[in-house]
Image (tube, rainbow, N blue to C red; front, side, top):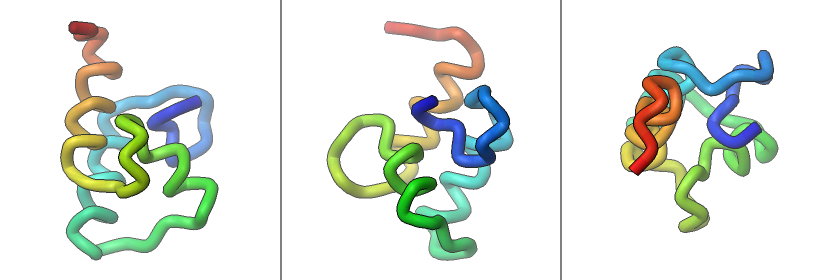
Length: 62
């Protein structure tokens, strides 16, 4: 599931936090986690991906 970097079957605020930490170079992701975290498909993991996961978790689809 896109955004689910924890691998628990859901994208939630914890996943968004982990993505933000990875974008700030505070934690490292495996290749699979990086692919899962890249929500917008621009081949990089950054805060825009974390924001999209937050919107998914809040069920805000625009």
